[in-house]
Image (cartoon, rainbow, N blue to C red):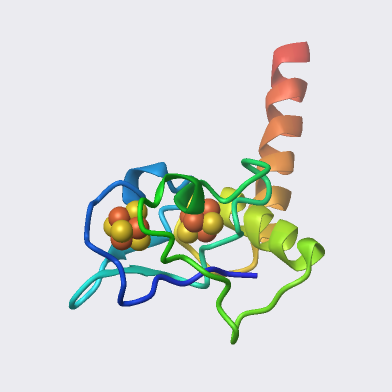
Length: 109
Ligand code: SF4
Ligand code: SF4
């Protein structure tokens, strides 16, 4: 599930640097969470870091972005594979594997 920030947010700036996915940014009036980047901290931490630090408890689950742990893990892996991108990560991994093999071959010679 992605989380969301409600209008109870007091813009204290504490959560933004804690997010391992850079999912939190300043919105028009208060901080917002990008549901495409929020993994509920799956892959990084056991607990959502923003919820842990928020002094006014204004970060509930986003009702329109309910995801399973598996889906969150896939989102985490996609974010890790291509920081900031949303295109297929498999291509990048295949290219990296090819490069590795080439490097091994040339060092063996
Ligand atoms: S739950 Fe984790 S990934 Fe989602 S916004 Fe909060 S700190 Fe970022
Ligand atoms: S920690 Fe809570 S109150 Fe502070 S900016 Fe983040 S959401 Fe708003």
